Image: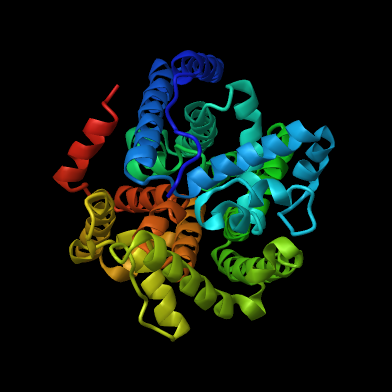
Length: 465
C-alpha cells in the first residue's frame, strides 16, 4: 500500500518529548490524588509500558503492517486539514457530518488524495470510520501532524480509562491489587491494540471511564452530576464509533445495579424473587435500549430483526477484506448456522483462539500465548471445581455477574462477526480485562491457588510492594 506520509519523521525528535512531558504532567496530577506510594508507582509503571507499546505500534505500522486502518485514519485527518485550509467554513462540515457523502463539500478532498485503491474515501462513507480522524485533528494541530504524537495521545486516553477501571476494582477488592493491575493495565494485547490511531484506543478508554463513573455515581452516589457528564461524553464517543460496545455495556451495568440492590434484601425468598425480576427487568430495559439506540442511521444495522442477517454480512465483508488485502493466513470460519452454536463458537474464538494449529504468521504467536493463558486458567478451574460451580459463582456477587455478562456477551458478539484473527485481536480488547478479572475472582472465591506459572506471571508484571 502506498503511504503518503511516513509514520516516523524528523519532527518527532522535537515534538514527541513535548508530548511525553505533557502526558507525564497530567499523569502526575492524577497520581497525586492517591495516598499510597505503591499506587502512584503503578501509575507510572503502566505509563512507561504504554509508551513502549506506542513506539512498538508505530514501528510495526510502518515496517511490518505497512499501513492498515491507522494509515487510512491518518490520511483522512490530512484530508480534513486540507479542506479546512482551503476553506475555513468547511470546519462546520467536518464537525457536524456523521459520514462522507457524494454531495459533501469534503468529498473531493478524499477522492483526489491519491491514496492507493481509493481506500480513504470509501472508508469515510462509514460513520464509525469518519469519527477517529476528526478526533485526531486536535493532537495533530498541537503536535504538527506528528503521527507518533497522535498515537501517543490516543494511547494516553486509553491508559487513563484503564486506570479508572483499575481504581474501580481496587476499591472493591484491594487485597488482590496485583491481579487487578495485571488484568487492567498490563495485558499485552490490550495495551498494544489501544496504543495507536485506532477506534479501539478510544472505545477502550471510554469503557473504563464509564464503568468508573457509573460505580461512583449510581452505587456510591459520589459527585453524581460530574460523573453523569463523564458517562454521557464517553457514551457519545462509543455510540458514534462502535455502538455495539455501548449496547452490551449498558445492559451489563443495569444488571450490576439491580444486583447490588438485590444484595440489600435480607429475606432469602424475596432476594431470589428480586433476582429473577432483575433479569426480566434488565432484559426488558435492554430490549428498549436496543430498539431506541439503534433507531438512528448510525446504528440501524444492530436492530434485533436485522441482527443475524448483519452478522452474516459482516463476516462476508471481513472475509473479503481478509482474503483480498491481508491474505489467508489469519482467516478463520465459524462453521455453524444454529444461533446457539454460533454464540459458542464466537465465544471460543474471542477468548481462547488462535489455537496452535491456527498460527500462520509470527505475530499470531503472541495472540496464541495470551489466549492459551485464558484457556488454561479456565480449564484448570473447571477441572478442579466443576463446570456448574464456574457458572453458579457468576451469580453469587454483583461484580462477578457484571463481568460475566459483559465479557461473555461481548466475546460472543465479536467472535461471530470477525473473520480473521488480526481484526479479532483488536475487537476483543474491551472484554479481556473483565474476563480475566472474572476468572481471578472465581479463584479467590473458592480459595483455589493459581497455577505456579500464572503466579510467576503476576510477579513479573506487577512486583509486590
